[in-house]
Figure 1 (cartoon, rainbow, N blue to C red):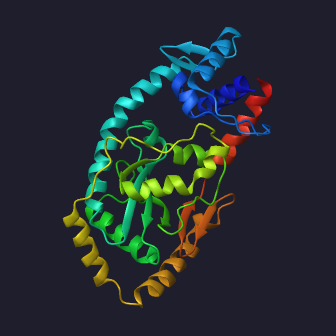
Figure 2 (figure 1 turned 90 degrees about the vertical axis):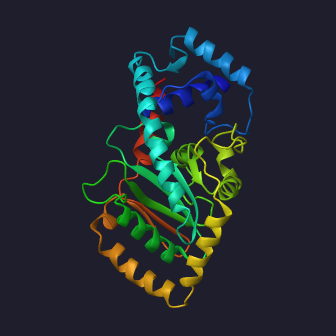
Figure 3 (figure 1 turned 60 degrees about the horizontal axis):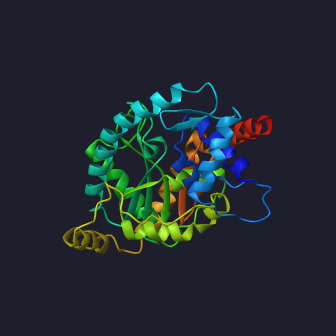
Length: 303
């Protein structure tokens, strides 16, 4: 069973163009759906299963990475992409540090290909934003306005090195609603930029990931670019929130934004995943998860 789990993990990330080290196979291990109980293997056990897969020719190894046979080019691609990604993450982190001043913002995390240190030079920054409970509409409005003024909000053909705001939740609803393979992958790789305490609460709220990834653990070491917000910034942010406490703001902005969302053609695209309420705003007109999972099932059954 462990050998199958290791192979499933290598296959899944191979589809994403992401070869793994043996340690990463263990860290991101996928639990087979037919498993009757959750087993938490050691790194040594996973490493031994990978050695067997390599010996059987079902997996190849190159420069310390493992992948499906014939995919050696993925290794060099990952190395080159990581070199590019470091500069982009540093720029995204610098922007997020300034956004800590924005009223109602409690956390900003980096998701998508860049959180895996992948993506191309023209890619944007997928921001996962946590806002104060009861202020999701005010928070989204102010954050979008600030990014627009800074020239850092993605819109139209303006993509490169701009923030894509497609996922908002409140600090009262941190559990992810779509609990599948892709979500477990996406949010296991999420890279917090500000709001370390909220990020810890997020990990605790999404402990369901352990059912898919049995080696799931809470993050122990603070990520390199996680910014600890200065108390002065927190005080300034609270003053801004006090200025926007008038009771009419939230329902007014909710009505206005809901009309805009409803009028957007992307909201009604076939297969789109859209959530719009007072606890979560999620805009995924072309979610990647279903197609990746279908491909994963095909390759796994053929292996």
